[in-house]
Length: 524
Image (tube, rainbow, N blue to C red; front, side):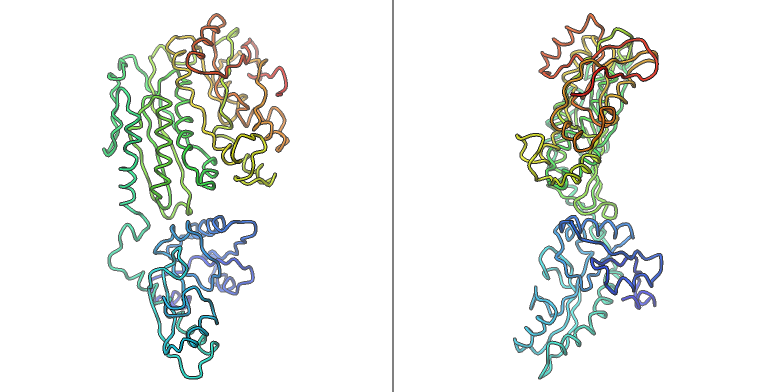
């Protein structure tokens, strides 16, 4: 194959050589091809089959691989790998399949002789989840002579394997009609997904939109939503879920990350005093799984229902060369509206009171550190949860969706009892609260709630001091409300009516310079 590529007898080039054995001679051949060829030993130590195959795919995609040859690769490939590389990965088997499928090396040749067969050979076949069960691409035949031994038959068959590979590559290169499916994109799966998620999107209808899918753009009628366009300011927010997605993908639990996606956007919108109106999502993957994508979008629809906004459109992108098997990424986009004279923050000053609303857990920030701590403590996602006995597993607890604060805060916004809000996301209380404070004002935190169990465990496992904890995690407070002193009781009553149970007397604003958030007591 190397010689055929070098001599241009086939329209292909070798761009990567990888092996799970550091001493494999093929690695030396790969290095001899020069620095433009990715040649790499990939260790499988400590990795599951799926994790190892994902690492291999990452390397292959980085090298620009379009077609894979398995040459003496003695590992059973995972379903995510075979699904991702469907039609783009071939293997050689030392028999005329489907005869003697599943056998290996000399045992296959002995079986041919024992069966009294007059012919044998090699088969190039596409690799699927079924071992030696993929579509046959090329077969080369040899005669089985009288007195044949397994060793002599192996030598005859092996002499044809390289030629069979070259013929298979040539077939792939010379195909006259190449479809989108040949490139790894399934249009039918995309259409099926749209039909599958339509009911979920319909369930997010609200005044101003009907949440219908299928058009080129989603429509929203401000007047129908009760807004006077002359006095209305639109607010836009976009965000993702970050590496929390890794946990969803590893545990195959995709039901709640859509809620996270909505929460990270709409919680930012209300900080400006606005009501979320509509939401759009972007789902990108290497190979579209309708079932997984539908689970994610159903979560997005649930988040939209919690936030009272319409899911009016989105984009599903299937990009085979960009993502490893089982991987996907999410982005969300939300638009809200606020009356021009009600934009927050406004009139924030010394004497204002800080109220904290409880978080539901880690929310969607800090998960790169969380995953590092799990590795340090030798905890898997299916391990028992050391910080929450009621959770079925570590993964189940960590996937608790981000709390959406829209319905708790909207009554206070409509009653004009707030001067400001702060969504506690990446950067924690210390980095986010100052974004809502004017210069010359300092927040004195006197009543921070005790750390919930998950944050106690994170602090113990990481060794982080209070300052670093408050700069990394929400530490139990997901939203801070800034209220004039004479409006505190009204604010608490409205929060209670909205069903908000976790309300904390967090502290007060004072005049001052320097650090704008001062902790008056250590975290408990």
